[in-house]
Length: 45
Length: 592
Ligand SMILES: Cc1cc2nc3c(=O)[nH]c(=O)nc-3n(C[C@H](O)[C@H](O)[C@H](O)COP(=O)(O)OP(=O)(O)OC[C@H]3O[C@@H](n4cnc5c(N)ncnc54)[C@H](O)[C@@H]3O)c2cc1C
Ligand code: SF4
Image 1 (cartoon, chains in turn blue, green):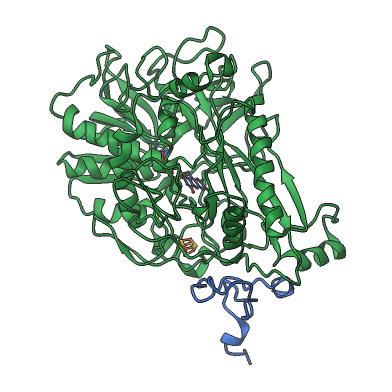
Image 2 (cartoon, rainbow over the protein chains, first blue to last red; image 1 turned 45 degrees about the vertical axis):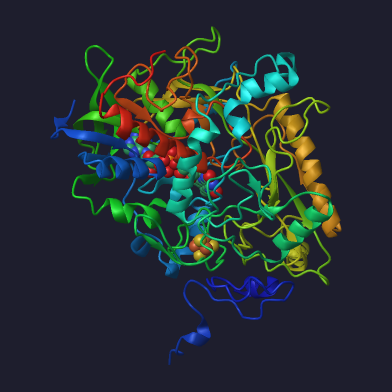
């Protein structure tokens, strides 16, 4: 995901209906992978 | 011959786009229909759910949804004096496999051909004179006209819920649509998709240059849709994992999202998956098909008898199965006789990759669908005067970029090292501000005497049958066409303010390792003369009247569009002929 963050690829966010018409605005959200996102998953003890 | 199964009215070979449409139409007419499909059954929820549908490595790079060349492949050569070699990893085209066929992982760019495309030979000869055409070009009229196909194009678009802007409704030109299209009986069922930034810029620049840009007709839904069979599709979310992938969202028109749910509810329809048809069987007269032989996943051979055989296995597999079954005379380019394998074509694709100032342009390339984009049609077919240019044919062109997937779509300016720190820096700098339309110039490929399919003399498949051999190269006409179109295309990116452009012309020799499209066409073409066509105007085989052959194999030459709109319109046209004519009086529909 380091590479995705570096270039600004948001991964598989899947739904961009709210952003398709926002022209020339940088997409603001961090990437999501097929396995989800670390901060959506409870930390292992 | 294997164990015999109970007889059916109809056997369908291959359950992709055309097989599904025909199966539905004939089951709807009350016939007992069985479909036999080489690949696995595929469902959205179990095979490509949103959770992992967007796996670029699995689907785009490792080709999970496609035919494995170890199951079957083709041999390839450019010229007749070369020895063809087997294709061991797909390149120029991606043969489908499994229920839904190419419809599962297509882009859903849903075009109609121009009225003049169907009478191409007559039209070009009248306008430019026979001497204008290259001597070895073998283009033909189709035997069917645009006006005859119009209601069938319409049916397919309403089945799919195609999103688009009409350009010509019953002869009245509509603002914002394609002014060159043939008249349509009504507008598209859905409005066009919203366009992302880069695509919109292209449309604006094209308009400023005096062209008439329009949104590409798309089988990705611009809004929720219920089709005439009662099947529902959801709105496309512009997820950017579309072509080469299945849609987990039920938003891309495919057999699964439009016709199969209605078809499988019919009690007179059954299907077998993972079963490869190896032969169409004939009776002793050779003039009547008795059914098919197929091999199941366990390697067991079966015979499925049927009164009517529908071959809908995708263009080149149709040709291969006709050759292997000894139906119709095989084409011989030396003597210019025979019909099966003749007039085989593909497409002439090129691209322009352009780089914009990263401080001014943020394209968010990952926001897209596979049939998104703005196009122009000024340089397609015979929409412009070819007289001064010395070639025929053309294509649509557009900013139709489908993705910013990071393995595939990280364009860097020429001269950048292929790896390492400099490469990373260039990817980072250009990812958001480069444009890579992909199949940006979608050129026609016309037919030639030395471009064809036959059976390979050396290589065999897992059943020990000869592989189909492709002999194909680009001719000067297509190379000239592509140079002209690609230069015109680049002018539009220039007008958009690109600071650097790379024109990726299509050049000879034809390269079987570089993806173009999966629009293989011809080889079992339709026409009005059994001496130069394998099928009559209803896609009925001239020699075996209880065999209909569906797919782009029927195209006498390929036009400057994606084929499936026309492939499906022809399937509906053939279904209509079977229902309204053939079933009443089974036999040859045309006396030639
Ligand atoms: C990546 C990709 C993108 C594409 N994008 C577009 C697009 O945007 N627009 C467009 O117009 N077209 C597009 N196409 C082409 C489109 O998919 C085909 O034109 C369309 O699917 C053809 O329909 P068909 O019924 O002839 O064949 P298919 O839909 O491919 O169905 C043929 C079926 O027959 C089966 N079969 C083959 N041989 C046998 C056998 N011996 N026994 C049993 N079954 C067999 C196959 O497994 C397959 O399921 C694309 C194709 C690909 C691969
Ligand atoms: S871009 Fe749209 S139609 Fe294509 S896979 Fe994504 S949601 Fe489905």
